Length: 114
Image 1 (cartoon, helix red, strand yellow):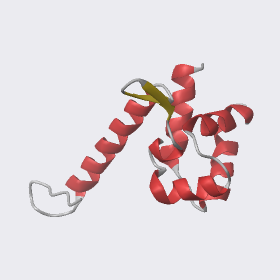
Image 2 (image 1 turned 90 degrees about the horizontal axis):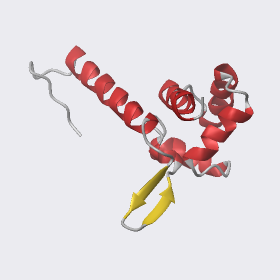
Image 3 (image 1 turned 90 degrees about the vertical axis):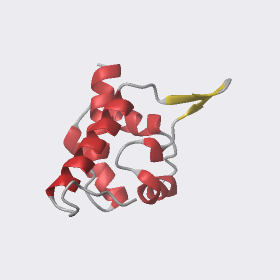
């Protein structure tokens, strides 16, 4: 998708818009259960639905047999809510840092688990 700014350039305005959209995605993720209801069925959210993951990183997680958002939350909890350890574990799988995903999981746990 092409994002235009008032000036028509792809400078600071676009970066600010992307950051706001990312923050909104994280806030929606944190404020919702790890399931989604469609009609009369309830399904677990997939890893691709975690902000910052998407299809490419989702495929890498699935190669490690990690399919659902609750599995990322579980790993974070198994690591005793250690952000650095979770970042390192996720980096090993994704082969790059992913602050959005780490922040999303950390904030979800803080708000929904304690």
